[in-house]
Structure formats: C-alpha cells, structure tokens
Image (tube, rainbow, N blue to C red; front, side, top):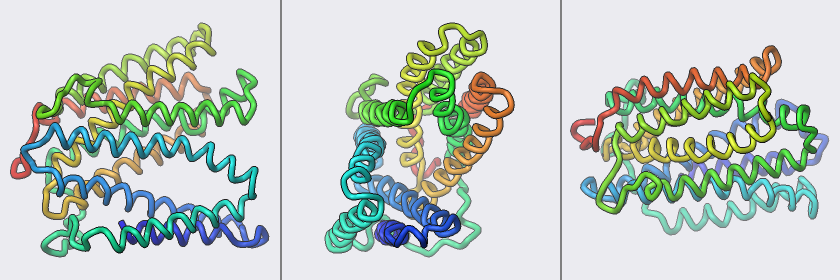
Length: 330
C-alpha cells in the first residue's frame, strides 16, 4: 500500500512539470505508473480486510468489502467534478501538485499508523506462485475478466462518442452524466448486501453471482436489440444504462467479496492480485474492442459483444462454489 501511495505521488509530480515537458511518452509513463499505483492500493486495501475479519464472519466480510468498493467508486465519480473545479480555479499544473501534496499527507499517515506486517505472507513466494493454485480463484478471475470486458466494450469509447454525435450532447453533459453514473454505481456497490437480501451473519456464494450475471446478460441483450432497431434510442440508453449500472454494481460487489473470501489468509494479496490482473486484462480487451467495433459497426454491435461476454461470464459462473468456501477448500 505504501509503495502504491509513493508511486502515485511520483506520477502526479511527473505531471506537475512545465507544459513543454509534457510529451506523449512522458505522460504515458506517468499514466502507467499511476495505474500500477492504483491497483497496488486497491489490492492492498481489500487484502487487509481479509486479515481483519474472521473466516467465520462472512456476512461482515461482505459488508465491509461492499462499503470499501462502493466508496472507492463513488469517490472516483466525485473526483471528476473535483478535478474539473481544480482545473478551472488553479490550472492543471497546480491541480496535480495539490493532489500530490494531499497524497503525501496520506502517505505519511499510512507509514506511521499501519502495522508493517499487516497482510504480510509468512514466506516469500516464487515467481511461479504468482498464478493462483486455487480453482475457485481461477474460475472467478475468468468470470471477472469477461464481466469487465463486457462493460468497457461499450462504456469506455463507444458510449461517450455516441452520446455526443447522435444526441448532440456537449462535452460537459457527457462528462457530467458519466460522472454521476459512476457515483451512483459506487453507492449501489456499497449497499449490495442489502440489495441481495443478505443480513449480517449470512453471505452469498456462486449461486448469487450466477443469478446476477444472468440478469445482466438479459438486460444487455434487450438494450442491444432496442438500439439496433432504433427504438427510442435516447430513452433506451439513459434508462438502460441506469439499469445496467445497478445490476453491474451488484455483480462487481459480489465478485469483490468472493475473491477476498476465496483467497488464502497467508499471502492473500497474491490471490487478490491475480484476480485484478484478470480484471485489468478484461478492461484492456474491452477498451480496444470498444474503439474498433464502434468505428466499424456502431454502438449496437458493441452492445452485442458485451452480451456475448456476459453470456460467457454466466457460463463460467456455473462452476463457482454454490456457498462459502473455506480457506482450506479454496
């Protein structure tokens, strides 16, 4: 976690240089460093919760994972507005410098306050052990890869361009709408245990993940068909995106809980890290396909690719354990 915070500070500092220094390779390097830093912090935070919650308190684990995941994404959406305000008030250079300063304070607090051995494995893993030996983790990671590929294949590139070109929305309208979507998405993730009907002391398993993946597949198929037929496209996109966001948020929250639940206590970050590697691969595939498929065939085709990915996610989810898997079984 501390390494991730430090890398994020360095990445922001790299962007706080004079504008003439901001060449494409320099900015790409800063973005890559920032992305690695984000995943290190996300992985570390969720891994730490595994060590703080007893294995027999899966309901509490689901609750805290949902809160952590949801608050993270809600803050991410709020960050769009904060970033826009900072750009307007103090400009890009001072904005990233201010963020680096705030993170430095957080970094110092983390170094001083957190225990150095929190979540630390008892033995150093070999490179070959980076890939999980747990069947449950591998199945969930595969499902996660297609789940996030299904979202990004129409959400990342195709949707913003479609909203601007087809509906005539301004950049501010598109950015504001998607930022609010991300905030709402994070809120739904945070309350996922209530939505799934799970009270304290109870926890969902693979059956719940299967059901919600199937529901998302059906919704995406309906949206794809409606857009392909040009049936009230603006209403379908707005309403469909809201419904997609709610169901996707519950899917994501369930996956986030299950990976922490399946992971081994000793070296939990290895299993969680492997899972997020699959997540990143799905996002990469989805982003690349989003631009290519939209350019060649349009938004409806992107949605049908999303539908296909979600169908694969649903099929893979058939092999997830139906109930909580103990650390020894995972």
